Image (cartoon, rainbow, N blue to C red; front, side, top):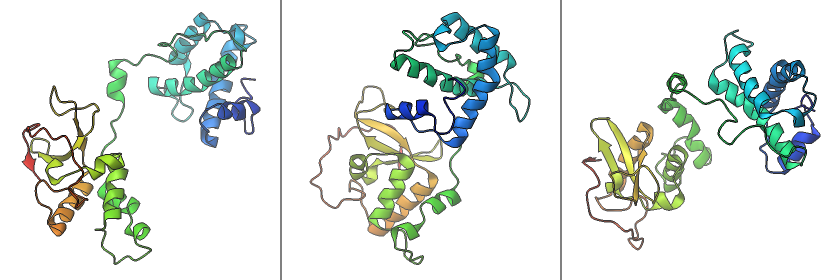
Length: 263
C-alpha cells in the first residue's frame, strides 16, 4: 500500500483529496514515491515491519535519525538538509493520517511536536531568504494589456491597475486597501524603504501598546507607482488614495506611530 499511495490514479490519494487533502502535482507524487521506495520501505523491511499499524513511535523516531545519516540527494550525492527531509516526511505523515482517519490505526506513531525533525539555529541560518522580485518581473506580471484590452499605449494609471498591483504584491484585503490615505505611506530613511501603515487589528505593530496598525513593506516598483499616482491625482495629505468620498471613517488616534518622512 505504501508503494501504491502516490501512484497516478491511486484510490488512496483520491479518497484523501476528497477528505480535504490538497491535490498533488505529478512531480510531487514522483518525489514522494521515490522517497518511499528508496528509504521507507527498505527500512521497514529491515526492521521486519510488514504493516503500517506495526510502526511504533520508536521505529518512527529511529527512521528520522536514519534519514539524517543515510539520505542523500540523487543529483548531488550530498546529504539532504533538514528542510528537505521534513518535506519528504510530510509525504509519510499524510499516509499515516489517512490510516488514522480510516480507523486502520488507533494512534499516530509520533507526538504533536516530533512528527518532523526539529530545525536547529544553524539549519535556519542556512536557509536562503528570498529577495525582492525584480522590477522587470513585476512589469511582466502586471502587464497593462491584461487590464486595458490589449492596448499597449494605455498608461497604467487607472484605479483597477493600482488596486490589482497593490493586492498582488502586498496581499492586503480590499477593505484595507480602500482605507489607505496618503499619510499611510511611510519612508524609513535608515532602511531606504517605504512601508504602508495598515489599519488592522493584527500583528507586527508599529509600536508597543497599539493594536490597530501594522507595518506592510512596499515593493520599490509599487512605491514608484504610488508616487506617480499621488502626483497625477494631486492627492493631499489626509486624502484617501483611491476614494474621493470622506464617508469612510477610521478610528485614527491622531498620535504619531513612529518617526518617519512623508512620501
